[in-house]
Length: 330
Image 1 (cartoon, rainbow, N blue to C red):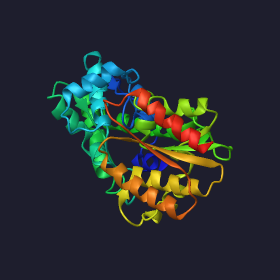
Image 2 (spheres, rainbow, N blue to C red; image 1 turned 45 degrees about the vertical axis):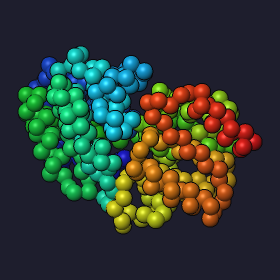
Image 3 (cartoon, rainbow, N blue to C red; image 1 turned 120 degrees about the vertical axis):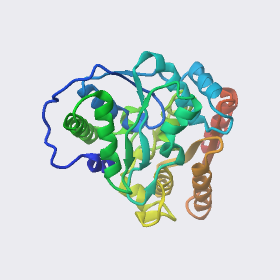
Image 4 (spheres, rainbow, N blue to C red; image 1 turned 30 degrees about the horizontal axis):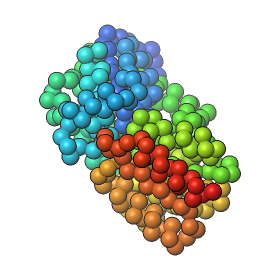
């Protein structure tokens, strides 16, 4: 995700000490894009002098609150986000929810990410004060810069203070990424290890232990090395994302990540199988899994298990499918 990080850094804004501080308490829901950029936003608001609180890891109470506050048609991750927002709403002055439109050229974010702040305001009936920053790499920088200005006004600090705090948070994120990667933080493995299983899906599904029913932990307990799309570089994923490879045709970013990872895994003999974890009724995943299934029939036959979950999915049946899949690999 370094493309988006570099892009959002405003030019000609040298780092300097902040000239003002905010007494605002900002809540960060531990859901959706938190698993990719949560530390960046936490660092950003901390540098502004805000007190930052995180919602706890997803649990049944949080899920139930989200389900109670969203329509039936809302997808599972958004219901979970609503639950996280409600969990911290009375503990902070404002809840921060970024609006992700695009994170790379010729890539689109899932529609729910494009409208996430609005969906939260609508589903929660404006009971929560929500602050947002828009990220739209494909269209340009102006909208993002404008929303940084709105954050400055909301926190009652000057614009340069916000820009410089963001630049410093971005630099910290880049330096951290140079030393590690998302997968390392989430206890998944590396390429090149024998007996590996690739776990694909949205990061907020894979790395949320409650929603994933600790899928990666269960696979590791079965003595498999677990890899996720982030073990491959963005260029590698994009280059393998048939039929959207090369980034010359607009497609969903998460779709490119999962397509590219699946096709790259086919070329890796140590990958024994692929598990795709998807929330029920996800439009992007329904398209991506179809492409993957077709590709696996014409190339190396890597076993593929698609696990679909919603708020009613039981762990017993989930575990049975995993066990059957692992038995097949053996």
